[in-house]
Image (tube, rainbow, N blue to C red; front, side, top):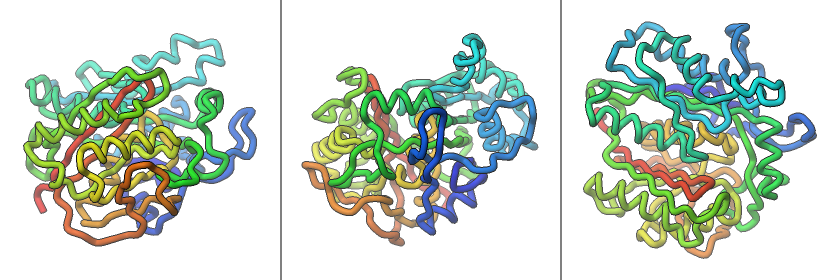
Length: 356
């Protein structure tokens, strides 16, 4: 695993920052948006002059993982992003803005010989990409798959969320009674999914993805898609909901998303399971969010440490959920990662700690 975020340019620096409860959210100016709270990477190394800003993020994330690794005919590559090089549109380069162009560029840059795959499904993209990698391995198409995810803060994305009146005036407050919207962020993350149990950190024991087609931007008020996604993951894992040790929720801090998640967890009898959202540290990193949060949650699992939800003070959902408010050292075996997005998309993955 590896990640490049406003909290650090590698996995270790991110984990240290998270343990200190630092946040990458700060005041920035992005295009016409002045003095707006976002999580942007400071001093991103140039590394190569032929790469865009996003491509540099992706390169810095994946390069240490593939530096000395042979990439054969059974090694897959999946790119997860929602907007890719969106800035090319304003430059009149619509062809270059297409996501498959970015996927092929990154694939050839690292020397993958298999055809790259793009997973772009709103904000469930990162979690869904891991599920796709798992399924491709199960069907025998690949022995291993590198999943690379990334999105950047741009004027285009800020304009979209602002038009929805979904932006918070302050750093976001997931699940809190005073929450009023998202804080956007940028990040890149990478993870290797493989059929080999040797050196594995976790096993993907169950996953599910259900689209309830509720609305182009509004989540189901009953949490139907998320409820069914988690149910599917539990069924594949062959465990009861009570076996989950903690939940890494989507937790965007919009009034509707957090309420929907709380309802879905309540329907599954998961009210007492410790739950966090990492959006207060990283903001909402769109297509990278699910993978980035999965990576940090795997570190939590490995270190038996629960991470608090930054920004949360008092419960603001109709159903009770057990929000983590302080760091805790507890034995952990199973984690549930959830994600939800525009168009009624939902995804869930259950991971089990292995090899210690």
